[in-house]
Amino acid sequence: MSPSTPAAVNRVPRHVAIVMDGNGRWARARLLPRLFGHHRGVEAARRAIRYCSKAGVECLTLFAFSSENWKRPEEEVSGLMSLFMTVLERETAGLLKHQVRMRFIGDRSGFSNTLQQKIAEVEAETCSGNGMVLQIAANYGGRWDIMQAVRTLIQAVQAQELESSGITESMLEKYLSTAGVPEPDLFIRTGGEQRISNFLLWQLAYSELYFSDCLWPEFDEKAIQQAFDAYASRQRRFGMTGDQVRRSAPHA
Image (cartoon, rainbow, N blue to C red; front, side):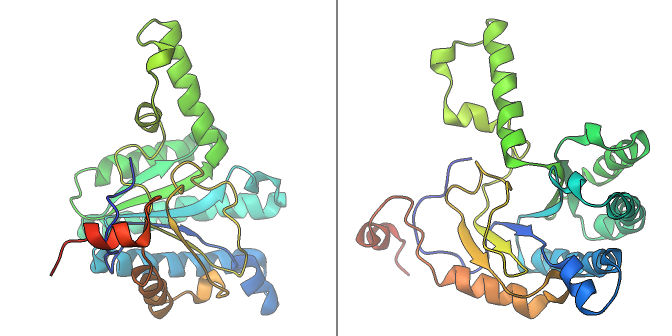
């Protein structure tokens, strides 16, 4: 979707996207296996989901597993897949209780048939939720997302369903995995790194970026609110000048 009209930033962003970085380093600092850090990361994710839902966030997107993460040690990848399945089995009831609708974005073909089936089941079970949309980016890459949308458009042109000259940005956005939700207002990355890491490359074009040194397992409600406060203090211009934004803002 196109960015919102420039105006004073609301204190609570409509869409928050998070790269949950630092699980392995958190565990290593405590002489624990990396997978233990991922288990603690699930607890942090649960806190973030609960806090964002209560705060009125419309959509929360969590980067759970990137298309590059397959390069990690086989033991860690296997453990992550097992953890992924366990989380889906245990968390669905809580999502239903709070009317959270879960969506998965990414290339599911890389997962086992059992995991793909479980993903589809959870999406179907929560599809009627009228609360926050929770998007889990799994085997996801921003370049993959753009490419799969482009391929779909090419197929439509080849089938003479549309003219190539008529392709627009908004048309391509309809084929991105995030179609139907607003673009992220706030991007958060924990763990001290300051990279987007191939996450929502198209969608983050006008997002406010917030980087925290806090490792993900320690990123609690207070830390989330600090990110929201930083977001609320900024002026979103979308190419306009500060004076134009101030003039377009509704008067109290």
